[in-house]
Image (tube, rainbow, N blue to C red; front, side):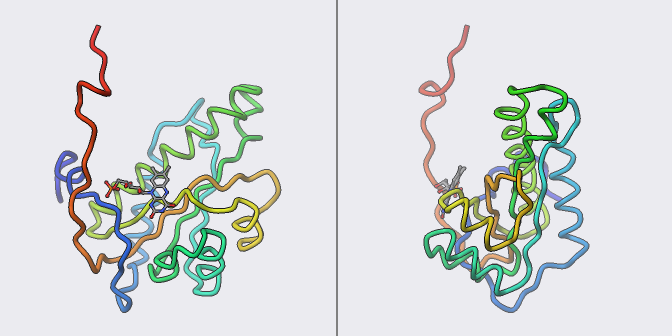
Length: 173
Ligand SMILES: Cc1cc2nc3c(=O)[nH]c(=O)nc-3n(C[C@H](O)[C@H](O)[C@H](O)COP(=O)(O)O)c2cc1C
């Protein structure tokens, strides 16, 4: 198993997947557990994760995400939805508007790293129409889809993407 730093360095967005390599349910379970190990405001975990394996539903997500076809090519898509009402009970408007979004995105980020540690790849998809995702999955009212993670075995090794220099993004005091 890679250490944390190696795992982070090996994470690249993967948009081509091996078609005949399904995701082992044990690995999927471990990835979901790592997502849920992320911190959350008041330990409330104000999110829901929908595990989409069904081909027709993944196709519907492609339609919702402006024809990003790799979503259907990957055998699994994890849909991370904020559950604002859950955080609102403890933290009012700040919980509903901010903490539930933070809880959800941290969980998705942990999942994305767990995917790499499990020997697979993913892409975080944010470019989609919320209502079409809602319709595609019949989401219960109140849930807000924030991120889709396509996930499977990579069929490409992308060039590492560039990053801004540290001194551009970090302010030391
Ligand atoms: C909030 C967010 C939204 C994104 N939306 C998309 C998307 O809709 N489609 C896509 O192919 N990649 C999407 N990405 C992936 C980024 O393009 C990618 O992370 C970035 O180019 C850096 O490349 P890397 O992930 O390989 O390091 C998104 C990433 C984030 C964090």
